[in-house]
Image 1 (tube, rainbow, N blue to C red):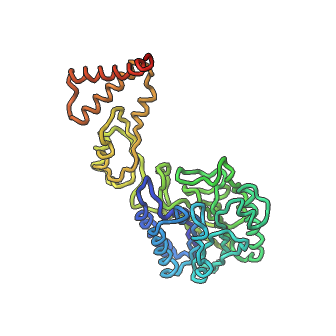
Image 2: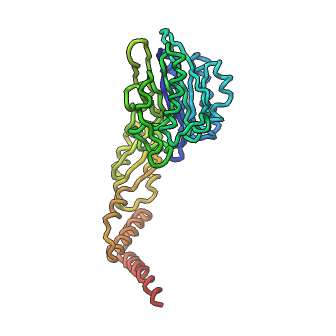
Image 3: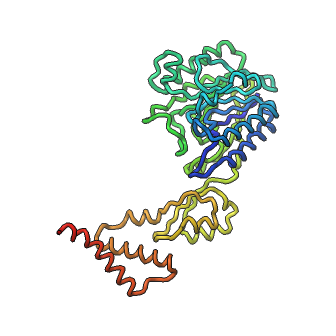
Length: 387
């Protein structure tokens, strides 16, 4: 049997206050196309469907569009668990009724961990165990066990899964979970599950299952064994992810051998990039950049003040979202704190500002007045202290 492993859709996400709904709709169209072209038997979403517990209406509408196409139009079962960003009760609303239609959603953690059994076109069947994100306190409450941390909580949940699977040995075992495996590569856009590394779980806990579909970490990766995998997020949700190649994972299970998988690339409507250089060079390069509509962070190396720098850059890169003045920061970190150097820097800054506004340099008379004013400002505190 074949299924798509996806996670971390984060519908409703913004990047530096820029809505990404159009970008998400674009890549989700590719997910639907992959599901159709590869004739998959199921689509798995391993948590963080939404970006926050109370999603915006447009995000709910987009999810409805995607699920309607997959479940109703293509008759492909979809299996969803709540992640740490989701509101589990809201996500799991009416899930008992929707399961009969092929939409299987597990919102809040339940003591009844029963599998969703799907038989593929090839005749191979799999038991999917859907484990939504749950704090250790929730696991303690639901199962009445001792679980002081995420490791013990997950160990308890997987023990329940193993007991259940003893009743279904004829099926392949697939665990769907939203957690942080020890050694996983993080991104800035992921919300920590707890403080101080207490959220980390040993990958060896999952070794006995045929495939483990994980969510939470945004970069595609595996830990412990190749079949214990994160599919990664649909899009780059921070500039720290600029070098990641986003994809969904096509998984194939057979009665012979281990699970096979293939990463199917996702091509964004707009990429997320970081560019660096002097303003003049950035503007010149932008004139002929075929990807000028990408979402950009620009690191400027200029060491002088620039008037309306973001306005200038947006003339060639309309979707620049953030600017870092690394040149100025580097310059300021090496400045000596001598009084005469401070005066000189202030004078230089004022000269540059005047040049930007007026389009011409200060006259000798104007510079003389400016030097006197700066000198007077530096003497003012001393005079105030002496009075």
